[in-house]
Image 1 (cartoon, helix red, strand yellow):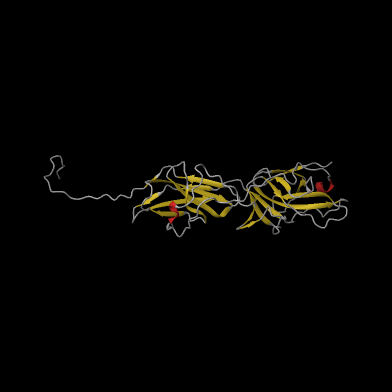
Image 2 (image 1 turned 180 degrees about the vertical axis):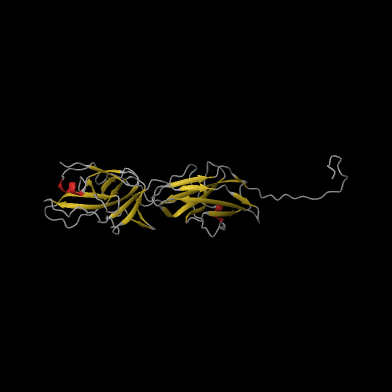
Length: 314
């Protein structure tokens, strides 16, 4: 009898309900997979409904400080970027186009669909579509399960974060199929499940009195899969918003100096948003308002007068 195996990830202990390829080749049973086409609705692509202010150097020179489009008055709720991503580029995961062999895609949901296309189907048709998974880039392979409706896409539940490689095999109506992936065979695609938002360290703002004055903002963002335009800086006169862009999503400059301009509010709050390739978004904001006082006190000498009797004598 065939016994289902549960392999543990060597890094984070994620469990898949799959069988070894040897068992899969002789088993006609389905695994715990119950997916099939139409089982998972992907979120829409990310579209930033915000104004844009260009960043140049470490000095804000744009008039966008008070001209941007405000975001919502509550905590931001951004949808994730397009479903399939690799490095600095995006792949149209929902368009049906093929991905480069071995392409790494990043998602922020443990449940996702893998699209496939069956070709060269003979007169006996297709009797089985099997999915195989590896957690160590092909050194070991396990059978994940069968696509019960024999139609793309194949729904997968990773049960947690991690990096997983996949290969697919198809049987014709008589049971003939290419051999299961063997140890050392690289996966057709690699999918990283990343549900952890970036970590933000936001330093207290500093007001620099030189010239007309500047507000210096400094931060550190860390993430295993940073986006190509990972940060957005916002300001508000209240912690409740609305929040307006100092600059829109862009490369991380790690700091920003905002010139104090005539007409600015007397107190400002700042909020930094950071996102990664999977679409996870983190926020950090100042706990106390930054006081802006553009008055320059003046003083004038009035007259000479006797030493006060209360003045300490030297």
